[in-house]
Amino acid sequence: MKYLFLLLAGGLACLLFPGCHKSSGSTGNSTPTPCTLLSATANNGGLITSYSFNYDQQGRLNCVKVTSSSSKPYTDTLVYGNGFIVSTTTFSGVAARTIDSIFLDAAGNVSSISVWQSGNHSLFTYTRNSQEELTQSTSSYNGAILSTSTYQYSNGDITGGVSAGSPFSYTYFTDKPSKYNDFLAMQQWIQYGVVIWKSAHLCKSYQSSVSQNYTYTLDDKGNITDAVSTDAQTNAVSTVHFVYDCR
Image (tube, rainbow, N blue to C red; front, top):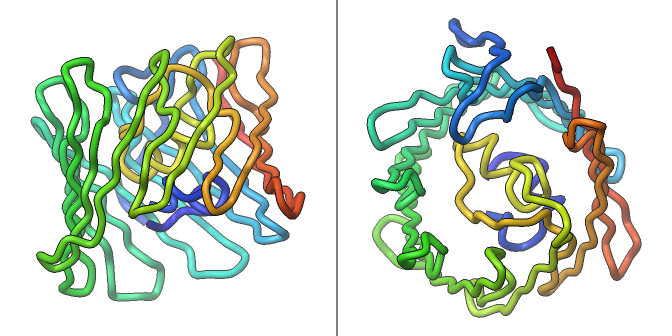
């Protein structure tokens, strides 16, 4: 997993290309109209990471360019097929790259993710019930199962479960609908173009071996302009600022 949002979102989420262009429209799992998310800047204890987002003609995320104050820049491109998405990460000045193949079920939910990097293979599988709620996921590395996670839902939200043997829980702002760029969903969207752990409401807090509280500033169109994560034990603060094109 490559993005700084992993650091901000807690344990569970601690899971130069031609043709990249802006799109003011959007459909499906892409940026919702009438605004298009152009960029995000994350500040995690002074570590600054900047993200630039581009979209295909159908409004789907297809290019993420990332620069960081502590590492080489890289670009993530997403190519969409019938029932699958291929996400390729290429690092500037480095020959190695990561290829993620995301497979979707008939309802458009992620059923598995196959990751190849430096000749090694990781596989993540996802099981859902008839309400399309995530019930279980497994991870394996070069054929050996590493962990299994289970999930519980209430009111359309993932409220808790067990991840690799450790219990976790989430709370939500039940008066606010979920956003593709809240702390629960953002990393998944920018890496895969879809959200795996779907919830109905805006994520408010996460608790496991670490505890984090989340707050958001929304503009008059309902877009998240600023998100703040506060560590409940240390009071350390991480922030993300979002810039949109609203036409």
